[in-house]
Image 1: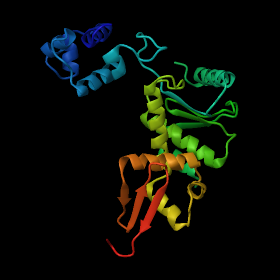
Image 2 (image 1 turned 90 degrees about the horizontal axis):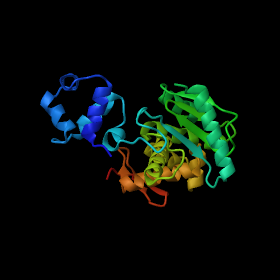
Image 3 (image 1 turned 30 degrees about the vertical axis):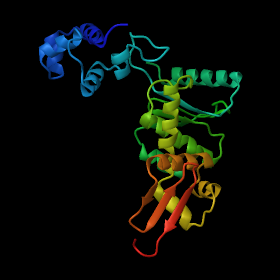
Image 4 (image 1 turned 180 degrees about the vertical axis):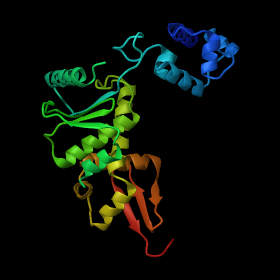
Length: 111
Length: 157
């Protein structure tokens, strides 16, 4: 698994930014960005949040490189989806629910 | 105004949709900033469902439909608790007391929420506080089993 620093570098390069450009955008010294990326310096919680916000990814992705089991790194932004489902639903009922959710997602939340 | 309408006006940034095609075993759904509700449920149940989905809106992250990890189950628990506190505030509990409610069911009926929701709120308060004393001489003692004692003192002590 790649490190937090490597993910920062990856996101930065994907945006076509240089280290000084990123440093300026989040108001830190260029050398700081360099040390993050090479793992020579750790990140504060607030900085992780700030970077996640800046790159439009979750802090989870930044820290662990994964969002959830069924999304990939190319589209780090995830939806929030939660349902109120009766206790003890059968597998068949659960399938119905998952189909319904998929239907609503496609109808209302097409990217 | 009905409770469900009050809740919706508390969160005007969200969209609310009634979905008659929602499967019977599902009562509500949140996708980002849209809440979907199954119209085939009792009013009190609808209030609890809506409160829970608002709890998800306030606290959840990611797709947590499949409750297959502890982290997702924690998110679910948190959403239910926070949702419950939206519809069962300490002042609501005092109101139940003043209205003469004696049981959890009485309180749930009075507040138009499910018994489960009432208990969830009290249990949540019980985890955080032993009791709450209000400025107007009420003391609420929250119990871990979801029941609550309300004391009203005549003197200010």
